[in-house]
Every structure is written in structure tokens, then in C-alpha cells.
Length: 357
Image 1 (cartoon, helix red, strand yellow):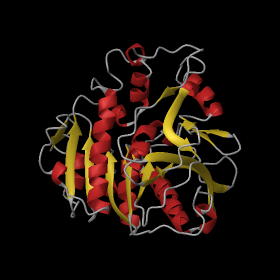
Image 2: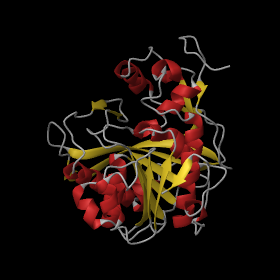
Image 3: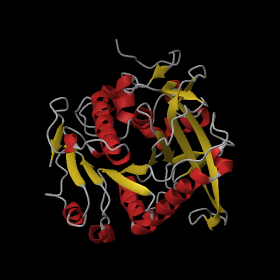
Image 4: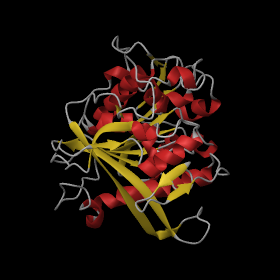
């Protein structure tokens, strides 16, 4: 029986983790004193929120909420959802659990879409962490529609921000700053279970959705520490068409979005001079790549909110998350764990939803 929301309903969990590890999570605030925030109404250092997802054996802490309470309340109103709906959702990640000690743990950085927030990709992020990755997801302040900081302050996004190079440049600087924190002891010691260590900066890859995919391509060229990346249905900006990258890059498109019908994708394809692959996800839309639709499906309200599948696609959205995680994991295993790239060269009968372009 599917869950139907009511104010008295118990917590609804995101779908089960696919990997062998339990997952912990913590959210942290970062302040870049070297930059003045270009979007803030008054001059101030650039402040960011990040969430970390990581393997853990510490399963006693409670599961983290999908959204913090204050943010959930505001987001319910933004999305015209019943009061308390988003607060009723919980993740599969244990809040403030201790990081499992894994030597040279590989690291994945994530950037959301324009106006997107890191929380709406939680299923992907904790799914990857369950396979032994440290996943760091960032919000881009004033870009994300709603960003809640450690003191409870909620900053609304600027609706005038565009998917342009100026925005990607700010996002790229955000990303590099977050990577820099991996050698910052003050940052590292805030991670539960970590006392005296830094992280190996030679085992980092990145992915992003939409403008986050454009950001990923930009970061690959700007920072030698990032070894490869994935763009989930990204727009390719004009300068990126000709710059490309020599590092491994995966274009992961919605149904019927390929380099054969998108001139920008065709342009960048010729300038991806290293390992490259392109795949599409059947019966999907641009919004399928976030987990919001899957969350609605898990909660039993998807057919009410998107009866024709125009927003989130007609694919089973819980299955879509399984497929996305599988191919993201395969890419990151290939780049960071010396894995094989077979899934990108030959169709896998376990995943008929994927077309190799």
C-alpha cells in the first residue's frame, strides 16, 4: 500500500540504499573570506552550505530529515504542498554519524541545477556514499531557490540569475573553495569520527545536474585535482563548446537529448579529447535527474501532482534513481577506483532504460 499524506502520518523514508555501507551525513557552513559575495545585497564574504554523505558503521544516530524543519515549512508553501508534507520525509543517512575509516577514500563533489538545492538530490548522494564514497554536495547561495544556514537563516534565490558564464564562474569558484577545505584541518575536524587526517586530493571527481553539469565541465578545466566528471542533462555554454576537456566526461541526457539534436552538445563532443561517453535515460525529462519526483512517488502523491508525467517523465521514478546511481557509480569507479567502463561501451541487459549514443 502506498503512503497517502495526512497531518498525522508517520515519517516516510527515501528508498533503500543500494550499496553495502550504511551512510552518515552532516551539513556544514563554509565562509570564503577571500571573496566578496557578488550576489549578496550588502558586501560580505561568500558563504556556502554543504552536506557530506559518507560510509559509516555508526548506525545509532537517527536518520536525518530530508529537509531541515524551517526549510521544509517554507518549501511546502513554495511548492503548494500540504503543510508538514516535506517535514514528514526522512533520508537513509544517519545524522552526524562517524565517518568509517577508509584509507584514501575517494571523493565526489556535486553541484545542483540553476535554482536547485542540494537536498533534492539526496537519493543519489546517499546512494553513491553507500558504495564507499565521500560525497560533498554544495548549495550555490542566491542561486538555489532556498538555502538554510546553520543559524536557521533562510536565503532566497535571486530569480534574475541566468544560466550564463558569469554564474558558472561563481559556481566554479565555489567548487574550488570547497575542494580546498579537504586540506583545511578546521573544516575536517568538524566531520564526526575524524580527528587527525586530511583527504587525498588526487582522488576527486565531480558531477552536476543541468547548470551543475556545466559547472562540472568548467571545474575540470580550472582545477587539476578533479579527475573526471558527469553532466546530467547539462546546457553547454558557448565557450565550453570549444574548450571541452581532456579528462573523462560523461554526458547523461534525458530521453531524446543527444549530440545529434543539440548543436552545443555536438560542439563540445569534438572537444572532449579524453575518454568520453554519452547515454540517455528512456521516458525521462530534465527533472527526472533530481529525486523530487521519486520522493513524491515513494510518498504516493506523484499521480496527483504530475498525472501525465509532463514534469518528471513516465519512467518509474524509483527505478530511475536505481539506474542513475548505477551509471554514476560505474563512472566514478572507472575514474577513481580503476574500474571498467564496460557499461558505457555495451548495453547492459540489467538496465534497458539506458541507450548508449
